[in-house]
Length: 247
Image (tube, rainbow, N blue to C red; front, side, top):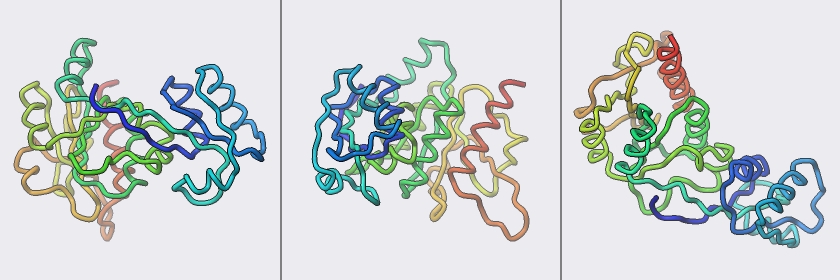
């Protein structure tokens, strides 16, 4: 595994999902006047089972720490351990006799989209997401909240996308780009080891990346409709791969 870092999680749903998945928290803050609703009680129970320190603080202290909207009563400090090298992840998958199914995110900007992509990726069996390197992590409290903790459950690789594509091809992984001009997704062969490049809705996939892919896939659109939300499109592609492999 690669570097570890901390993420503040102020969504009760995400905190509970991550605790149940056995993820590590340094501590969990609970407002002293928090209403003990069933979700808060479940969080406290799971935290005690895992010997996570529970710290009672004034609600205004949690509000100051939280980056989300509205007042909060619970905040967790997650120890993120979800950083892989590509070689490490490929070796792990091959040792389990699994075909790599990766998403490559080319400069997707909005936390809502990134979080939704992680959630659908986890649900549909994606076993790795490759992100370009940048100064600050793509995974923050908002992505963790939107993904309901899935951003800690789908392995993440951060590296040059060009290097990643080269290494994937060496390991027999077919690389497809999601593009308007591509073959309709239900006609394309998505079975086996596949990586799908997903670009932002604003700028699409860079031409340099498109030069290096093995093919392009698209969704049919009615006239006058340019595109769907990128996380919706990603979900359609992921579940089409599942459908093809079941059949």
